[in-house]
Image 1 (cartoon, rainbow, N blue to C red):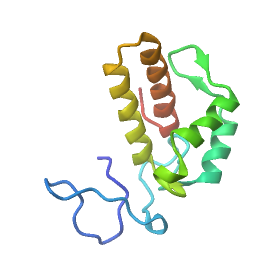
Image 2: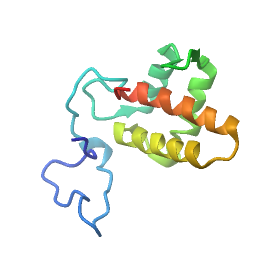
Image 3: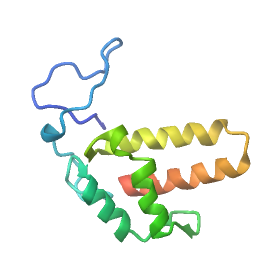
Image 4: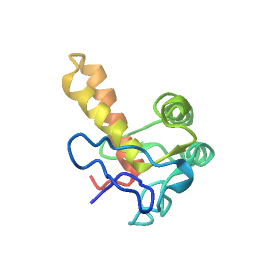
Length: 134
């Protein structure tokens, strides 16, 4: 079961109505199970520098699409989709999942076919980065 990164020994997981799910302080994020998946490996979070390095080193291929993102496009994801103002200095798999859900909603409810295709392509790429099996 995937859970939000939490503080060891903290009460209230946000699983019940009326209890919001809050992000743990960046210095106290627990390592995730399932090491070796995606860009996170066994880390609970990535720093901005590691995220940028990982996006720069990645080939940018989109699974099942037969296309790839350029290095410039991949580095733009770090600035636009995972901005420092939005997510702070560290990025967790849970936060990438939030972006994937946002892209899924955008692909479903957009009337523009080009926007739908771009959202689906980016969603597949983010799922690959996170280490989701699909």
